Length: 62
Image: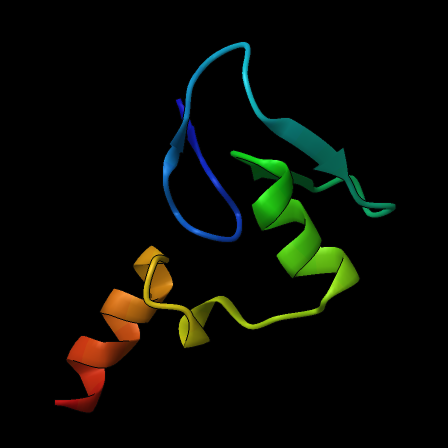
């Protein structure tokens, strides 16, 4: 299983979305919510409590 590029959750096989950048790297998303937050809204995952990246950045601040 791969991890979502935005929220850090595991993406089950056969589900989710995969986006390939021009340089050949793949970005995996568990839902359209994560894809829109990354590309359309250009949000930072460290600012949302429901992402794993927020939890890791919150630990570093303490």
